[in-house]
Amino acid sequence: MTKKRKSISYAKWGYFFIAPFFIVYIVFQLIPLLSTFYYSFFDFYRSGLKIIGPEFVGFKNYITLFTPDQNGQIDFLAYTGNTLIMWVIGAVPQLVFSLLLSVIYTSYRLKIKGQRFFKTVMYMPNLIMASAYSLLFFTLLSNVGPINQLILSATGSTFDFFGQVWPARTVIAFINFIMWFGNTTILLMAGIMGIDQSLFEAASIDGASAGQVFFKITLPLLTPIMVYVAITSLIGGLQMFDVPQIMTSGNGAPNRSTMTLIMYLNNYFGTSKNYGMAGALSVLIFIITGILSFIVFKTMNSPDKGKKKVKKARG
Image 1 (cartoon, rainbow, N blue to C red):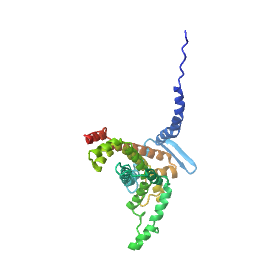
Image 2 (image 1 turned 45 degrees about the vertical axis):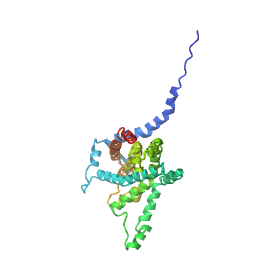
Image 3 (image 1 turned 180 degrees about the vertical axis):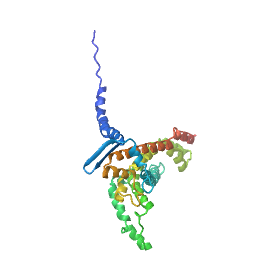
Image 4 (image 1 turned 120 degrees about the vertical axis):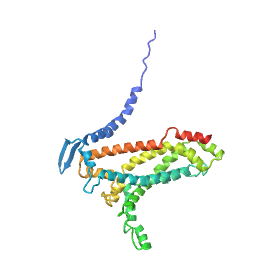
C-alpha cells in the first residue's frame, strides 16, 4: 500500500501577510475612534500643568455644544453651516469644471493629443501646500496687494476681501477649488476612459449629437465615479481646516463667518486641551459625515439607472 502524502496548505500564510494591515488599523484607527467616543462622556481637560478628570458626566458635553451663547447663537450649528457653505461654493464649480475638462480631453471626436502632459499640469496644484496658496492669495488680495492697487487706480478705493463675509468665504472656497480640481478631473477622465468605446462608436454611427452622447451614455455610466468624487469631496470639505486657519489666523474672521468645524475642534483640543468636549465634537462630526455621505449616495446613485438609459439610447 502506498502512503498518502499529506497536502501542504499555504493558506495560513495569507493571514501573516494581511496581519500588518489589521494591526495598523486597530492601533491607529479603531482604538482612537473608540477612545474618542468613550471620553466624550467624561469631563477631561488640562488646567495649566494639572489634568482634571476623567470624570463621568454623561451627555453634558453634547448638551454644552448645543447650548446658545450670550448672543443666542449655537456655535456648533453656525460653524457647521459655515463649513457646508464654503464646501458647496467650491465643490459644485469644481465638479462641473472637472467634468467639462474630462469630457473634452477624452472626446472620441476631438482626439486631443498630449493627455499625459495635461494630466500632469492639472494635478500639479494638488502638490502645492495649502499654506503656500493661502500666503499667495493673502498677499494678492490684501488691502495693499496688487489686486487692490489695480482696483484703487480704477475706482479710487480699495475692496476689503477679508473684511466681508461672502468675499472671504468665496476666496477660501476658490483656493480649495484650485487645489483639488485636478485630482477630480483625473478621476473623471479615468472613469470615462473605462467606458466601452463601442458605445460611442455606435452612437456616432446612429447620428447622435454630442449632447445626446453625454447625457445618455457618458453621464449615466459615469455616475459611480461621480458618487465617489462627491462623497470624498464632502468628507474633505467637512475636514476643512488649513486654508481658513491660515487666512484668518484661526479666528474665523470676519465675525466667525469662516470658522469651520475642525477649527472649532482645534480650539478645544489644541488650545484648551479639553479632551471631553473635543471628543463629543468629533463624534458629532463623524455622525454628520455619515449622514450626509449616505444622502449623497442615495441621491446620486440609483440602481441600474445608467444601464436603463444606455439601453434606451441603443434602442
